[in-house]
Length: 311
Image 1 (cartoon, rainbow, N blue to C red):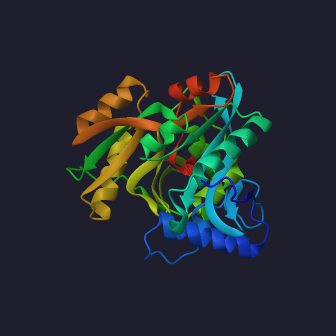
Image 2 (cartoon, rainbow, N blue to C red):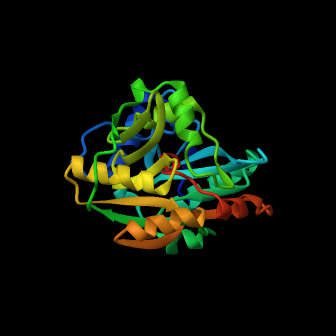
Image 3 (cartoon, rainbow, N blue to C red):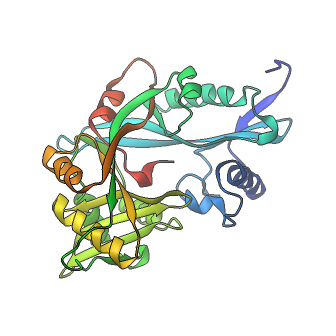
């Protein structure tokens, strides 16, 4: 990159700046046939009322690159210890300005911000591993992807569509508590959970016993994870798999992909493998230590970041 070029890295400071940002992100990260407002897919980081997590690179006043840096808290589910990390997402460079080093410059800036905010690690999701490896990122954590095909079911389980607007705070709390108990995961408030569940094309399925939610799962999230169950909670693997069969039959779907932490208790993994048509292991994300303390990276290897938190 020409050292004479003057770059400005800042948060968008007007409604118009946000519109230009969102149009660039939609063009770079989504199919052109999707016409909705891109920001609706990321309500906690692309809000036009709070742009503190949105970082834009401007070249002579023109937006050329963007990335979010979202400070989050890793929480240990038994000791209640916490660790601060930053999630990076919505990484894009305008097609007319790619290959000129602007993203590398932006990531250097984000690393400095992370240090000022005392974040211990940066985490992102991408299949562009060679590029991010040059920026110091490596694979962290593991997830297993189970293909669950439509098969026999003895009867419908009663799992049905749900909507975020009808869920009470007690419902949301119960859903979070029913996810598998792992050493570490991201802290999430009930308000954040409700807003994330309102992302377009996030399909909520719920089964109740009386008034209490006893099983639930999410399929899809905006333009991502179509046909993928990326968050779920249930009393047992068999109950969850029976609910998935009900959904496959009721919606006449042939197959769904179930994401699960690779460090789940063995009885969960054994049940999933016994009823899945196939399974593959993958890195959960890419991560990079900020500073010299690698405690957060080690914690992420023992924990899991669920689908709604990925940006």
